[in-house]
Length: 148
Image 1 (spheres, rainbow, N blue to C red):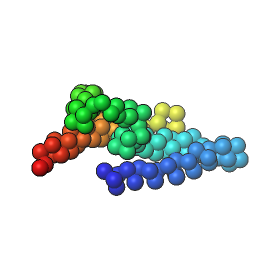
Image 2: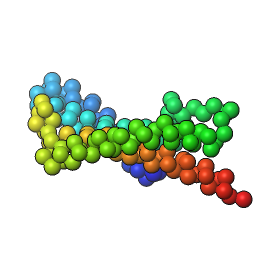
Image 3: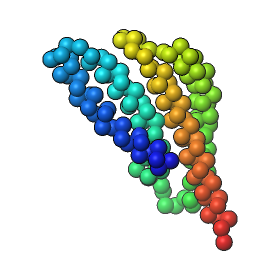
Image 4: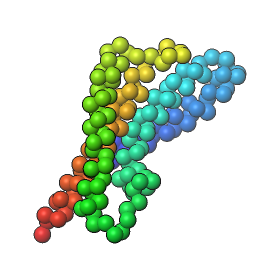
């Protein structure tokens, strides 16, 4: 998970460069600003798919502030019970459209630039990471309690 988080964090640099390049591309070069926007959308979707889970793991996500009154094991169960149904539903509901999008190499509507299917897969990745993180948190708490 750490390597995935680091890799996703590095997406911020090309994302910022592409967003910054849109103005000169549009006004000075008068070309490719929409394609830069399309690529930036893909990078942002992939970044956010990992960033939500990374923020939760680091305790910096808005929902991650843990009330001290709750036992860690109860918190892990509540996290799992709140996020797992949503993640499972998103995986179930999103797999068909994501596969269809990949098969047809879905493009962005305005520019017809290929790659829109990556945004659909980023949503699928987000749901998978949320589910894996909730299950891993539950397993960590179970192991801590079982350890002598």
